Image (cartoon, rainbow, N blue to C red; front, side, top):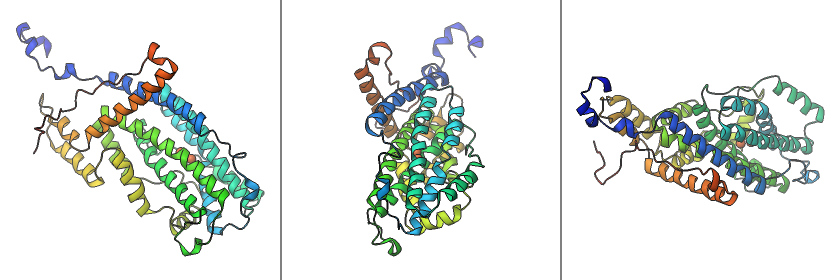
Length: 364
Ligand SMILES: [Fe+2]
Ligand SMILES: [Fe+2]
């Protein structure tokens, strides 16, 4: 357009595009955020969660007469976690151009690998499966390869948020059972302190994973709201636990997990979906779907920017901005401790696309 405008009109052209962040700049900001978060995460992981799957638990004291349902669940946990090399290699390949994200995936993989080994130890020391049986089972599992549930990075990032939360919930509920707090008649009276400690230790890791990926999704929501909300809608439309298609006895496992009150559709709705939504500023699945529909119905008039405005009403943008700011404060505190602030600080840059709420918010 510039070349057909008379020179005296150049200054009157709408300034919006010039004031907005380019995709390249947004990607740079997200990458910086991931790098800072990864550094913070790694230091914290080493300081507070540096446990060992063999040495951190008194395996000899694990009960030799765990309820058979519990052993079935432990075996299922092990089956899923032992795909850690597949999860890790697929995700690293997907994000290999990002320092923060690819290095994080290696760290994450090293934590998931511990989960697989700890659950395998639990199955082995329960003495309800022979070492030969475990070896054969493992061989069967490893004959299949886990593949990414979605083709692109943003969908997989969103998927991982829900998956980590669901996994954390599974382990927390196992911990409660092992602490003797089950409300299910067939599990009452049972407790095992070793198992409770294992489940709790792994659940703490899963909470840290959930937070890392959640912070990532928040940065995407902040800089690319429309694309990210669409990814969230697509992911929850077809969510299932990882490796559910690969584990040979999945249906039996899932039935036992469900009957033990560990995880099922109700838990997914209440303790996964609603929690993650709240953390992402989304009111409900209905609000998300209606917001996206509305965004699509609004014509994107040239210069009018109506489409952009509609997407910002789909979720609590202010909450996300606050979260992204807080993330940057956390990164900056860490960088000051090390001295990065003197040489290469991470800065928070506002997304100028955001319609400012000036007390007269657009209502329709
Ligand atoms: Fe895990
Ligand atoms: Fe995890």
